[in-house]
Image (cartoon, rainbow, N blue to C red):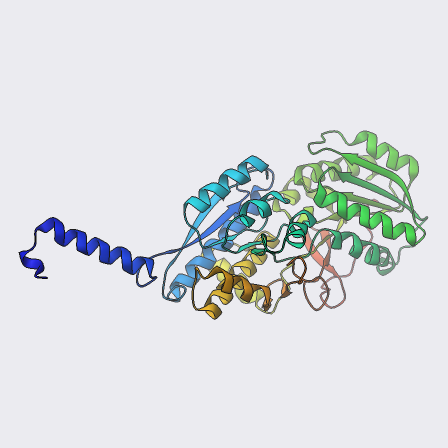
Length: 412
């Protein structure tokens, strides 16, 4: 065909068809879209901001290396707010409409997001730490085989706390005054399942649960529960509530009640103090608090990553998810590179399923039945922290310990 003798509209049409054909075949400039449902507003926004920065930095660094399989990446985000089911579903529909080739988040809810993104073919990688997510995969591995949780589930918190909480007092040179434990938990699966597993295990060790309170999110006045704790005088007060505002209020009111008169007890929290907002709200009332996280920046590349983050954002990472979210991205990239294609989802998913990836949070190896990262010292370890001078100091396990746990100020 002589293009110069053809009508202009025909020439343009042919060029458009050629352009679309090349784009569909992955040759050339078609962007690879990375979907990211994130909590960018609401109580978890400080974590969500760190997830967003982690993914944007990951995309930028990958693009600077020439992209993925020669194609540039583009981050497409959606705000899941306070993890409401309807927002997650709406974000899911929008991201699918954008034709994303992968969905990655730090956390985006319990069970709902796994079901939303499990309906599609592309990989979905999250670190929700929720049995409600992993059981979806275990119950229907064919339908939800694209869903991966790159961290252990929440039950691991209860197992680890039952195994290590009592040793923390021994390391401080503290003698527990009794075998009594207070449990304060919110009616949310992530916290309930962990707290209940802890209760089950400590009862088997001879401890007594003398306060067992279930609340809703948004408690303003903790006085009645603190009065029950005062009356029972337990040796351990454990708090299981994901909301950083609730947790900070608890510590502020705990400090007001026991700061002067004292309480001969250790106080432990599940994960929540890792959310940057907690320390800002709790202030000095958090001094001496013990807490754990099942995902932590403990891998060999952490310091290099931290320096790259500082160079880009002019400040240090503020959240565990600033580090851990990068693992989800890198696991996917490695799987795509091994497959040699992006939208060959079955190949990519199989590569993720069989991965052994040494990341910032430890070594990721996915379980075969529910596709969550294995828990343990040789895989993804739970780390113990104690807050002093507004900083989270690592006090266990021994392999990672950087500071010695000390008696909190309310123990007189």
